[in-house]
Length: 184
Image (tube, rainbow, N blue to C red):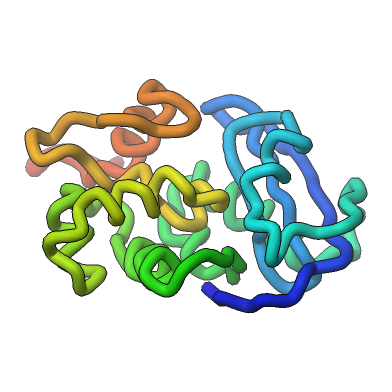
């Protein structure tokens, strides 16, 4: 994650089908800028902070490495490698706490769940539960910054930009097999 303050001049996008619906990725030459379960590129682009929002966005080609890596990670995620998105660079900008909170969120592994209170503590500000929740709400890079792994203190799903049905699907997909379950 980077708090870089220069505007990205160009970026590319692609939309791919997933079991949870269309998933779009907007990427610069070296990092994911935004992603989510939508085919609305303009709406997704609006989530990118103005400091890193690209001036020009075009359809990706197979030569665009960052978006190709992102697509491979999304494909791997849905094939069972739930850690794949964490290996793709992401660039978002905001205040110091929010950028740090996004970095911390990338460390919440597949199958792990944290409450907003636990997330705030991991981010170094235990009393900043609302700020931690705001970091989730302002996250432009869904799946790559796994805000879906943060739950209410009572275990409830709470909000998710792409709906709690998708959030539940992701959490169920990442859940470890039940003890005693045969895997073959």
